[in-house]
Image (cartoon, rainbow, N blue to C red; front, top):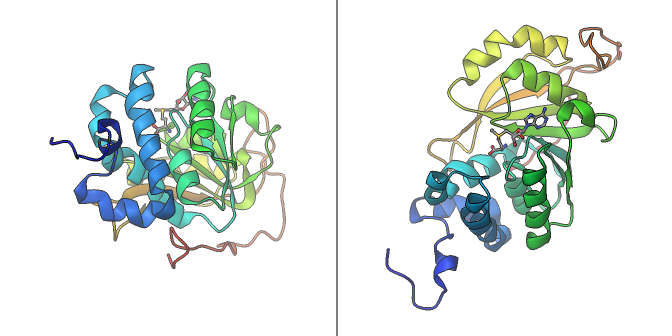
Amino acid sequence: MPSQPDEPARSWRHTPPDAVRAAAEHYFGEGLARAQRYAELLATDGVVRGLIGPREAPRLWERHLLNSVAVAERIPDGASVVDVGSGAGLPGIPLAIARPDLTVVLLEPLLRRATFLEEVVAALGLERVSVMRARAEDAADRLSPAEVVVSRALAPLDRLAAWCLPLTAVGGHVVAVKGASAAEEAETHQAAVRRAGGADPVVDVCGASMLDPPATVIDIRRDRAVRAGPDRAVQTGLPGVQSGGNRRSRGPRGGPR
Ligand SMILES: C[S@@+](CC[C@H](N)C(=O)[O-])C[C@H]1O[C@@H](n2cnc3c(N)ncnc32)[C@H](O)[C@@H]1O
């Protein structure tokens, strides 16, 4: 690739490729320079420290940053968000860059990854983002219930629901970025999701007008609280929780969904 005359090589290498530049500008808007800095950190420190596979570095925008940030369209204004199993910061960091109105907790149990996340948050100056080093199962007592709990490549849906629904406010949503298995998982694990306090899982796509392929997600509304502990199937019974909820939604930069 030819270098561009006025920029150091490491800078242009992490700009979005032409094919996805419009999508990157659409989602990140004024945060695009920060998103480029994040791509650079992933492609350098992230690869050296084993958080991102070397083969992912050339396709960070298409496969990782945009696939993550597309979830923004399902998150209401000013929401509290927990990213469970954040790893190197996906999807939580792209969401926080694109949506400075969000308060984001990056939940990650592994020290090496949590340390990287702390460094990225500091380097990017993400003031409304914090890192918690914990497993999801141990975090519910330490976190206020979030309006939206996100995850990506975390676990099969039954386990994911058991981990994420207890972190979600009643009436809030779990939004899990999934791959081609989404519809099958939603069907197979429907009963487990309901036992964990969720409504029926809904498979949908994010970014259909901007991304090819769009991001496939499973969205679960938290219907009711279930008692913590081994018998997660016991319902505590919160009357008056309405189906469908009343959450506000908006497009990725304030526009309509
Ligand atoms: C396959 S990685 C995905 C990382 C990132 N979300 C992504 O899309 O690149 C799964 C992550 O979940 C974390 N994890 C595994 N078990 C967990 C648990 N019980 N609670 C929270 N995170 C967990 C792992 O440490 C790992 O960082």
